[in-house]
Image (cartoon, rainbow, N blue to C red):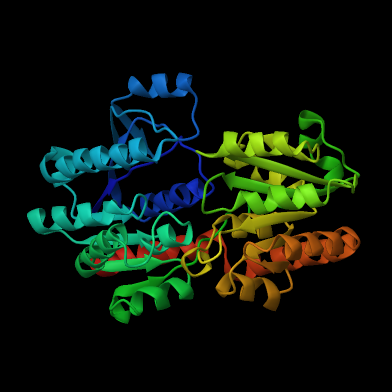
Amino acid sequence: MKILFLAAYFIPERAASSYLSVNRNQAFADAGFNMVVYTPIPTRGVSDEIRQEYKKRKLEKLFDDKMIVHRFALMREGSNSIKRAFRYVLNCIKLCCFGIFAKDARSCNIMFISSTPPIQGAMAALIKKCRKIPFVYNLQDIFPDSLVGTGMTKKGSFLWKIGRMIENFTYRNADKIIVISEDFKKNIMAKGVPEEKIEVIYNWIDEKAVVPIARENNPLYEELGLNREKFNVVYAGNLGNAQNIDVIIDSAKELVENKNIEFIIFGSGGLKEQFVKKVKDYGIDNVKFFPLQPMERVSYVYGLGNICIVSCKPGLGGSAMPSKTMSILSAGSAILASFDEGELTSILEQNDCGVCAKAGDVKGFVEKIKMLAANREKCDIMGKNGRKLILQKFTREVGTQKYVDVIKNII
């Protein structure tokens, strides 16, 4: 068994969900699978020094030599949407050529393709038609629904129609589609995907790597100059359109007179400077920005928060299940969700591990923060409930084994 990955992003690039790929690939290696990866030189969340270092690495071997990684040159990803789109297309063309013609790629008998960027699926379908090998599509984001939700296009527009064509072409040719929630499953079934082609595998967390950290034992307070006594509201992740960071900043403005509440944002992304400027323009001092931390420090990051934020723009809740949800719960912190009503909000409410405000509702978000700041004990209880939920249903072993089973059942 040899699996081909054609990856737009790959370690050491940083994203909230990077650990999922690492855990899954380790499980594939442990199951005896060999893997071949083609991917560009890293760009997202890495320094120029790291990028230069990887330019020298034409070939890597990982997971006890079970995985071979081929890297190729590609321009750095920027914040300009047109340049990003051009980079996506150029990357896809290169990956497609590798998938069809490269010697190592041709030795593989199945493809595993992620949904970022969304043209990856169409690329895999073309390779399948040329080489007659199956592919598994790992759907972490539903396109073009997500573009509509962020306001980048409208339903029925030319871009939306192109997106739907790409989506249908991908789903029709994929041999198995892995989705991360029942909401996702319902979404694509409504678009004509047969149920037997869909496998629901929730994003997990390595419960042994992300653990509760007592506030008095968290070194980030000293390192970042933070106050242990304050009620800390933490966000960590991408700073883009879909996450609706404006809700967090606008809420901070409303709460600026409450000197006991502080907002701590760890992140990177195309809009980070815009958000930093917005805080400066507001003239508020209760929001602090820090770079994304390595995965091994996630316990400390979420351990800072009395509550930790999961957010999205209105309309995106049916096509989003942020992987950070599991990280926060595993760290034993309570969740404050600014999210559309759906599976995520149901999980939080049914298991009493978080509270929810309607996506985009600043007033409701502020009220939830005030309520929890006045009842820190409630936050502690919800955090313990969240950790318990992870240990019962969302462990690394359970999630990764399901991926292994999907691959075995196709070949």
